[in-house]
Image (tube, rainbow, N blue to C red; front, side, top):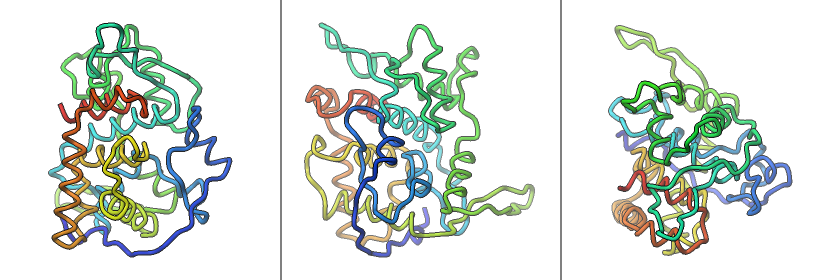
Length: 284
């Protein structure tokens, strides 16, 4: 990984949430899961998938590491988390025998379209599948990593490219063509580092200056970002600019989150269980 990518420029922002952002980003009873700054428009607020991809993209080159084979499934996990955050899907009840997170099925809670093409495509697949499938199965199906040819129809194709185009539309990235000897490839270099700087700063502060040492008290979207970015093998990019001591402390605290007893955490009830099931699928 290039430790020079994503350098952080410190700045202070005042935070608020307006009504239109509440409606667009979290339609369930809990309201929005993350505050945004006053000078953010709806176009510059990023989904969980876009944030993970942005952490993984090399700023100048505009593509993810060729050696990263984790980001594909990680982005599908982000899609399930986003659907959970927006109140569209939920995990089936544990029942009297307390079925484990990974053995419980994903059910539709609200089939109203979100307005996001990727989310709505995944929501349609989940809605039309009977009997329901587990979180782990859906991550495999949506990423095309299944040996069952009947399930290949569920694969979400060109996810990274589609997310990158979303970020182009939001003014975060631009589009270029690069020649790699034998082939040309579309790349998406960073064009405005404001969103990337804010994202990296948010991730760093979550495990340093704003560390709360209790996952139940952490913002749902932020905890999801930390764990899914780690599962996608892009979290270290956000920590690379840190000094050695802060880097070690940040990684230590991320390991504490990864090593949580997720079954016990899910039983505490402050988070939707779909979150813990997605986390569990990457830490099993």
